Amino acid sequence: MESPLLSVQDICKSFPGVKALGGVQLEVRRGEVHALLGENGAGKSTLLKILSGAQAADTGSIVFDGQTLSASDTPLQRQQRGIVTIYQEFNLLPGLTVAENLFIGREPLRNGLIHWARLFSEAGRIIRDLNVDLNPRDEVRTLSVAKQQLVEITKAMTLQAKLIIMDEPTAALSGREVDQLLNIVRDLRARGLSIIYVSHKLNEVKALCDRYSVFRDGRFVTSGAVADVSVNDIVKQMVGREVVGAKRKPPDRLGEVVLQVDGITRTRPVAGVSSTPLNNLSVQVRAGEIVGFAGLVGAGRTELARVIFGADPCDSGTVRVMNRRLILRSPQDGMRAGIMLVPEDRKQQGCFLAHSIRQNMTLPSLGRLSKLRWFVDESAETRMVEEYRRKLSIKMASDKVMIGTLSGGNQQKVLLARCMALHPKVLIVDEPTRGIDVSAKAEVHQVLFDMAEQGVAVIVISSELPEIMAVSDRIVTFKNGAITGSVPAHQATEEQLMSLMALGIERPLGMLRQLRTVQPLAA
Image (cartoon, rainbow, N blue to C red):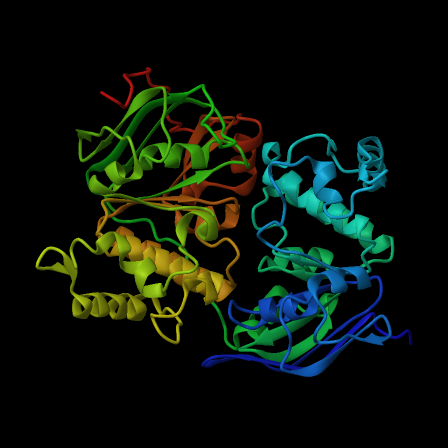
């Protein structure tokens, strides 16, 4: 039998107070897609950083392509050996072109200067060879998330990769974009490349991967052929128990209208943001109701949420909370009115990664936790952190550690705790379970159900149709900045929703009526 491309044996790694990896192993064969699976905090990310050279293992060995790797290797040295990592947060320079990003630090030179014609020509050749939809002269900041993902994959090919590590590559992609990416991964496998594929979307794993390995609590659990196990089997191996996904039970009675949005329209782009124009959007959410926003990437769901919160302006339209018209010039205005938003990109827009869990959770509540007006009541702050740690089962060694050290699921819970502490009237959660495991996903869903039970009007934005159908009472569909339908969740099917999202047709009974354009938000 041919020797494996990668063999990891007895890797251990500890941080102060935490043992991240306890003697794990991993074997990746040549020309296979190997799924690395486990809950948030299982040790996957730590191993990926060790493989990429970003961190050094305490003990253990890594043999790659027949050679034992040195623990002192830098990320550049690992890339030169053929190990290329595509992280969930892209490592691209948005102000540069696609071609410049592909060859950053390795630009072709002529007489000591960059040979621009050769740079763009070589980039175009690789792009054509991969058959991806990219223009080498486009600036990266003008590209969609899906196309930025393609830039990262193309960049790996310029590095002559033998092993590509993909960390949650489809977390920010819609259905069609996911299909495109999976086809590219299959093509890379056909070319003889090996791929480590990290994903919490187990249906993708079943459709794409050849073999899998499972980590739990920093230890290796098992490995095998993907074809030999079911999704439920993998979940049991990941969490060590049966996980039952929560499904929203239709409430017996809804309360009064809490949020009323009428005629939100925006034709001009928002400075520095790739945004979709909004066309006369109107929606209402009642107390105790969970309304799902469904649409393909760029449909306008997030843009509407940011307008409601006060993060972005609009040309015309009104937002009312408890029948009081709001003037929204900033997120602070939205928060004062009782609106809270958990953004889709928790690391870039939600968390202060270099600050503690305590600071991230309590920052907006410091006014309520003060004593003698100018000083924070640390005892009250500690009680608040402990209350929400228990309520949301947040796993942390101490509330003083940096939030950036937490798993994605626990970071999301901290952001939800931040919102809950302000007792909002309206809660908007954008991609609430992106990049978190099945167990944490069920816990986050239960938090949303509990808040609705308490009378909060909840909006959930998700690119995963099974999720939006499971958590919502009613689903509003979007396409190209317009609302195309409104469907009771218990009557909805994936085919019906996809038709409304992609084609804007098959409008169901009860579709939102088009409302007239009203006056601008600002007085």
